[in-house]
Image (cartoon, rainbow, N blue to C red; front, side, top):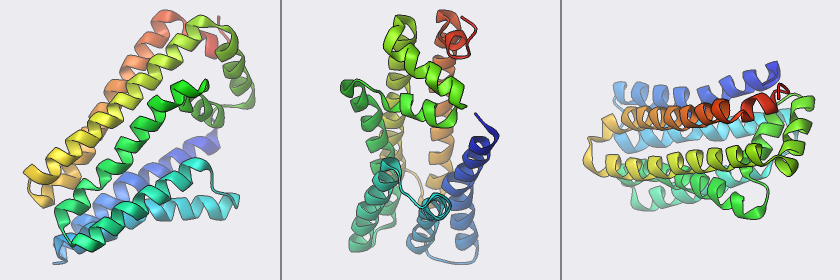
Amino acid sequence: MTRDHRSGAVLALALDVVIPLAVFYLARGAGVNQWLALLLAAFAPVAGIGLTWARQRRLDPTAVFVIVTMALSLLVAFVTGDARVLLARESWLTGAVGLWILGSLATGRPFLLDVAGKVSPAGVARRVDLLWTGNRVFRRWVVLASVAWGAAFLLDAAIRVIFAYTLTVDSVPAAGTVALIVLIALAQGIVMLHGRRSGALALMRGGG
């Protein structure tokens, strides 16, 4: 990653994970009811998309997807007024992301390939494109990475629904965050291990 992309990743982590958790638990500590506290916490990721738009003056397809998914899930939450429905709606987003990642394999250009191109220096991004079209080892690695990450997000979606309806409402935001971090760590561990053993990482870095 370039320095700008690292800074963007840190900001995204704060807006998508840290701030929503902080808003929820601070609101609960102040006596706000569970439903309203969850609703307030849900607006942090939207704020992140707004900041991105303000800097770039454009919304990429991923941002539009996130906005539409969140809008639909929040609409359902407003209609029901149920805190557990508001908790479960997070599974819509992670589940849809998982399906998007896996579904992109059928398009001939996996979603993760575009992500790698966006967060890598220009030289590495060009190399990634060339390797994808001409190197079987690298292609297999990208497919494996897509399957690993897609499966992680789908599993996270299922876990969030289970948590939403079995755990206490106040414990679900923290438990869901921990589960997502564990799943992402496992997926990335598999991807990196295979990348090193197969030589795909060395190829991407120009060392093979």
